[in-house]
Length: 161
Image (cartoon, rainbow, N blue to C red):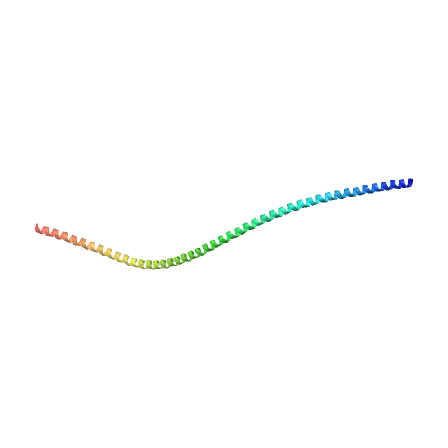
């Protein structure tokens, strides 16, 4: 009987020890589960933050893409306007060149006309000089006739006296 009691005591102690070991194992599992839960929550939080960051980044990129599309559209429109301006300016340049060519032709005509007028002016100047000489000569002749008339009048007066 004493042996049985000893065995029971020893079995009870073994069971107690086994129960304590089992409780420790259960406690360790709960701790590990709590730790894993914390890790999962941290991972989930990190994943949500990363997801939010990615969403925000994607939205930002989409905004930038829209802005770039708008800029491309505006640049194409500006390019079209510039092309039209270039065509108009090329037409104007061509027109101005034509006018310049016409002016060069007119200038050559005027130079030729001036040269012919210059020779005409030289001829007229020579003719004028000739006429002035004739006028001077005629004045001298008129003076001479006046003097002769005065002399004749004096002679006529004397003869009447």
